[in-house]
Amino acid sequence: MGGQGLRRRLILFGAPGSGKGTQAELLRQRYDLDHIAPGDMLREHRAAGTELGHLASEYMAAGKLVPDELIVNMIRHRLEDDGDAKGFVLDGFPRTVPQARSLQELLEKMDRPIDLVAVLDVPEEELVARLSRRATEERREDDTPEIISERLRVYRVQTEPVLEYLGDLVPVLRLDGRGSVEEVNGALVQAIG
Ligand code: AP5
Ligand code: MG
Image (tube, rainbow, N blue to C red; front, top):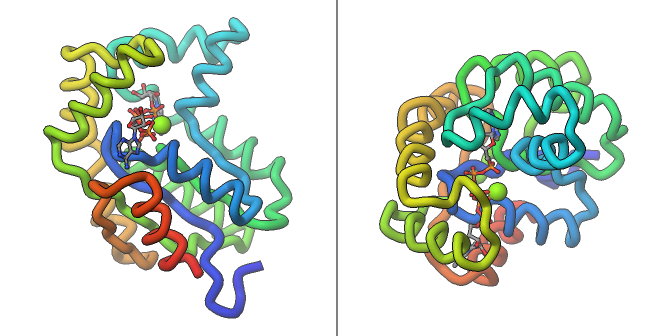
């Protein structure tokens, strides 16, 4: 895995509503990658009534980040499970500098370096519009105006600094995330090769 310029161990990075989940799913299908999304995993835990789901639920409902230790453990197990046959796309992780450090350490031990961090840049008005639209379609409990604005604040304060940290270690590519789903997918596929 990896050689010949292929980029198949990916981090999709971006604010809430930037399209990480949508694009990760398309990349999963195209390249047969493992789609690793802590937000989805936590919602599954919550629905299944596990202890982790219970611990995470208050943070999620408030638009705050779940403590690093819980997230890093969950992701560690997931990465160890996957065998890395065709690679992975991380969607929503890492979201803090300590998470990014843990990920680097873990992947170094596994000899599975990240090939690319793709950042989906979308202006804040568009993020709010997308999440508000989703609120009427899907009813995710954290898609209310107040919680959307808290999630965006948390992104600016806790998550954006991760890019500076990763930028010293891994190639980072910023993409315009404002186009249609297909346009953004096209740009990602071109970058990934
Ligand atoms: P998480 O589930 O990761 O949510 P999020 O980051 O807030 O992001 P979203 O899933 O809302 O947006 P997205 O970028 O995936 O965009 P999407 O494709 O859905 O996290 C939820 C919570 O879990 C966190 O608040 C936290 O509590 C906890 N958590 C998760 N990870 C954690 C971590 N690492 N550490 C600690 N806590 C963690 O698109 C959004 C909408 O826009 C959709 O309706 C979609 O159809 C639409 N759309 C997508 N692309 C386009 C486009 N190009 N044009 C128009 N509409 C589009
Ligand atoms: Mg998502």
